[in-house]
Image (tube, rainbow, N blue to C red):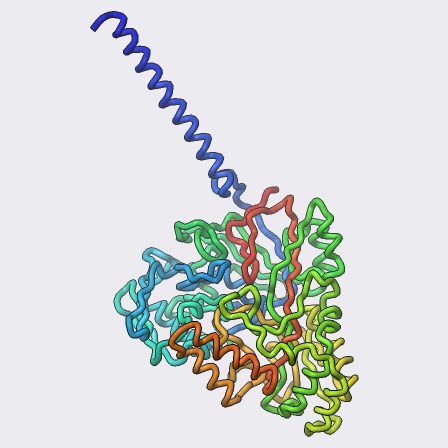
Length: 531
């Protein structure tokens, strides 16, 4: 080889080495940029996140409780076999895959291996079987949507669910966020009291530390948490505890929560009074969070008392001005919308406006005529409500006024939220109560249509509709039945009145935290402090 070619070859070699080095540097820089954008290496880890919640949960056992406070906290501690993405698609979590038999009667769940509970025990099929069979028993949503079913252990990491009839939406129910199917250790499930587990052990990114009643609930980062290796997407995908502790501080007064988020005492505050929206929205330190929560609702007691009379329930529904109730509850029209759908517009698969002519009628004269046709004889009806959720109390005040305009005497029974959730289980203690119902995956999960739920809509026609939806040969057939059922609810039976849809108004300090998201509740994994 000539000296010139050798020199050229040497030059090429040098250039190639430089190129590789540059590519390496470029690749390293690009990787850092990606990590920064995805919130991995550039994220500050550690510290305590302070969250002001507006009500104390009655329990942290999500299988037995339908309350928002339970769900909001428990989702950080417990996990489920399946979860929902923000577009309501079912995604894996503790189950890595699911098989469905051709006859639709058997579902086989293949579990992720190496997942540990907060007590150090590995999660296996025996824990899943115990947890899911309990859930099928204690969850009114599960029983009403799935019917009779049984989970069994096939091997250490495989579980089967067998049901009696092919059923629409089984996996959607298992992935539901409401009264969700938390997986717990078998020994805890077997010793769980009826009121809910007292030993709080899950598989989530945070573990339970302490609960001081009326003060705070503390959860801490679980160092042995095993995340799903997938992009975060609502409740699905990778979860990472980026803070050391989350302090859920019970602050029942709205003005106190507002003061705390304003001064920086809290990084997040739930349920800010709607009158303060512009203050939060115009701040450089704070941001509002508006998300559909669900439907503001008045549930009638159909087991005992004056509202066992269907004509009386129809009279109330006919006479009230729903918009006035929503204005009284929320003030700002950013926080509500008038809509009669018992499934929500955001859920295109199931939404219908069937029965809309019986919604927001505001016909006082027709209501008075229905009142005459009823067996109502002037007795006082009791509306159970709470000031822990201001919308509940404010809407009850307006409903009282609306009902009195058509000739019904009303007394408000104002208690704290935990007491309300206990008291509503006693049919002798109330005649109607105010609450909100968050979205569910299937019509058959709709709690106030469940005969076992407070209000007790034990109605043969409702149950026939429910069974027809559950066993329909297709989603299209199920939807047709659901339209008929919703029409029946508004026109005839009136087990409850959906006043309208409403949005939660939370606030967070945008200069101090990042990564917090929302889907049917706050998501605080993948959330970090910036200060």
